[in-house]
Length: 66
Length: 170
Image (cartoon, rainbow over all chains, first blue to last red; front, side):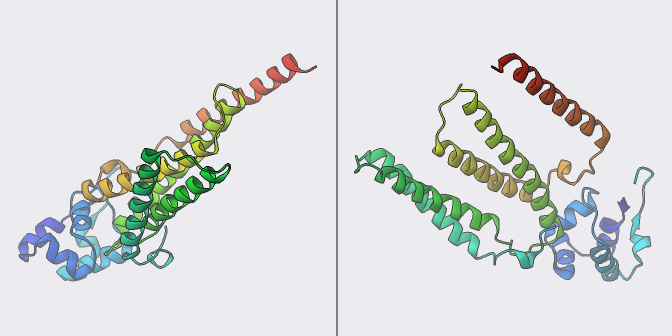
C-alpha cells in the first residue's frame, strides 16, 4: 500500500514526532507506515487522514500486489 | 493480537528486570561459591533461583510498552508466535535426545531451554522495536508449500515409527 504521508507532512510542516503525538503512536510507527513497511489499521489510517484534513483514500492507495 | 489491557502496566517491566537480574546474580554467586549442601537442598535452592529468573523474565514479557501502539503489538505477536514454536521444538528435541539415550536427562536442561528462549525473545523484541525489520511486517506467502513440507515430515516420522516397531518388537 502506497501513501503520501511524507508529502502531506512536509506540506503542513509537521515532523514525524508531531504527527505521532497527534495520533497517539510512536515516531517509529509513523516512520514504518511512511516507508510502506507497516500497514496501519483502519482506525489509525482514519486518524492520520483526519490530521491532514483528507479522506483515507486520498492518503493511501492500493498497489498492484496488495 | 494481545491487547494492552491483557498486559501489565509498563512499570512492571522494571520490577521484572530487577527480579531477573537479582536471580542471575544470585545464581552466578552460588555457582562461584560452590558450597556443599545437605542432601536434597541444592536442587531446592537452585530450583527456586531458576523460578525467580523465569518469573522476572515473564514479568518483562507481559508488561506493556509506555506507548503500546499497533506496531508494537504486531511485533510482539509475531515474535511470540516464533519463540513459542522455538520453545516447543527445543523441549521436544531435548526429550527425543534424552529418550534416544544420546544425552543424560536433567531437569535443569529444561529450565535452561526456557530461560534461553525467554532471553532470546526479550532481546529480539527490543531490537525489533528499535530497528523495525521489514520481514516482521511482510505477509507470509507460499503457505501451501510449508504445509506440504510439514505433511511429508510427519509421514516420514509415521513410517519411521512403523519400521522401528516391526524391527525391534519381541
